[in-house]
Image (cartoon, rainbow, N blue to C red):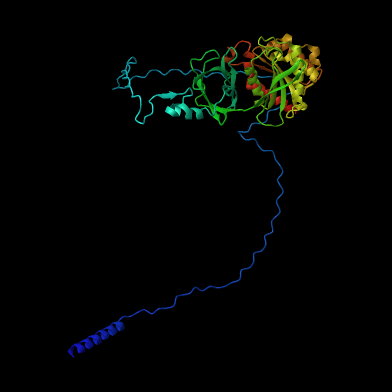
Length: 486
């Protein structure tokens, strides 16, 4: 009975305590969440935008020339004789050596005769390395170093994937300072090497292969390799030579001339005595360019020297066709005369005039040095658009046709008198001026003495005139004259 009462009182006590605790706790009332009020309004449709009419373009006015813009060169006059000064820039005076300064206090001078002690020879290595590969290293001629099976097969094969012939080193290279560097392939001439001609300093020097296949050193002249005055390192892009690094004692910084890739092809056409093998050089890009048949005389000139001249013309927008004179392709050369050369020049002009990229209205004949007499005779019969006669030291004044032949030239003729002694052409210049002034012949006469540097003057011989013709000034002058004829 007592146990039942205790359980009853315990249950009542806990019930009362629980009710008291519930009434003592204050709970915050739960309120409904606040809602966002939105005002609905109507948006008017935008009005259509009416475009305004475009203003009329302003009338074209002459643009003032800036300091960096050069005016277009004036055309050469047809009624005057122009005399140019082609003297090279004078070399700077040699710098005076500085006086020896007194040694600083506390500094002990070392005698120049003292040398370092000899190094000990390296210890002989073992035949095989730790990885089992041979210690021997194979060095190829181009300076690439390989070892083991890598040298015997893989890298040696892939290293020769791009191989550039030495003929690609020759050509015309243009630098940023508006200078033209000509690499002339004169290996088959008395020079026996590549020659480098600088149109800015007017220097002609010799190249010698130094390290590998693409590095050459520049000698002090065309006949000596030492002392070295600079270096040329040819650089390639994809499958052709693109530029080279030029470092010389004449400049404080290196130059990177870019090659002008003229288009060259071997062609053949029918001549009076059979098929004639020729070479056609054209500018890098198609366009409205003129073309000339270049005659260098009945003699057998080296193809590398002739190619250097035609590349110079093509760099200035002229197509140039050259062919080998009769008798020069034999084992024992027996060149023919001027009459045979003039006949072949007529056939060459007919081929050039029919070329789709040139045409008869833009084709002419260019006589250089001994090729002037044949060029004049060919022009009398072929009737080209123009004629260029380049009188050099390699041509004698008595070899030029007389007054009767010159008076029959009723086409534009550009007479470029150059060489070291232009005074010997004074009688011919007087005759040409008479035909121009009294008989109204369209003759343009330019006298440009070749006052070149000592390097060019020392290159005496049968090929010296070709070296001087590579000069960029003469080619650009004639190209400008031909362009103004259009």
